[in-house]
Length: 112
Length: 112
Image (cartoon, rainbow over all chains, first blue to last red; front, side):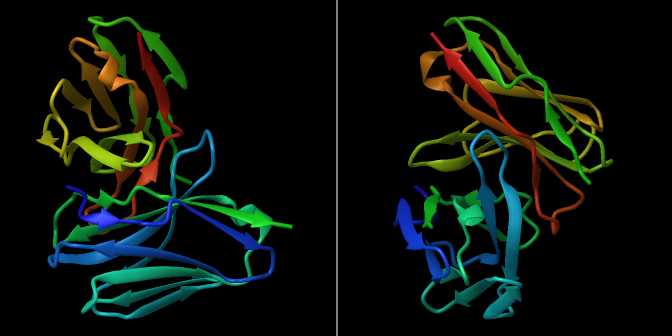
């Protein structure tokens, strides 16, 4: 039973517009959330994270929002660029647990 | 820059064969992980290790074992390969339990 869910398998957005990726989780013990980006034939790379004590974290064009009461987080990419075309994975962990639970991923395609 | 190296990009094995997947990291990281990535399921944790000779089961350890004889090397072993183990296998390491994972480029294993 997946504890982290990304319900949109794909997203297509025009270059320069905003990309919004959504992620829901079921485990109320999760307190640390991450987004990873994966290009074909490469391993995932860390993009941005947020702790449960915050509701927003920003890094350049990437912002992650956390709504603990709704058990929901989102990743905003503004403005979207062709190099952002990739698969994005949401991940979460609880306390000092070494294990990360991953979502199924969302494939983003940025159209020129 | 952290480098996680997986020895093979592609492997084709026959049902019943014993398969070794090797992973080496060069940053003296304490923690190492093996995940498999399947469409629609995201990344699922097979095994992880937080110290030399230590190992812990992840979410889907059945049919797998691991070995960590040296800090930099973490091996995944398929004792008797089966077709349902056809997948992309990803190795990762992290400095500690609060640090992001660094992934290798993956090994695509096909079992026929």
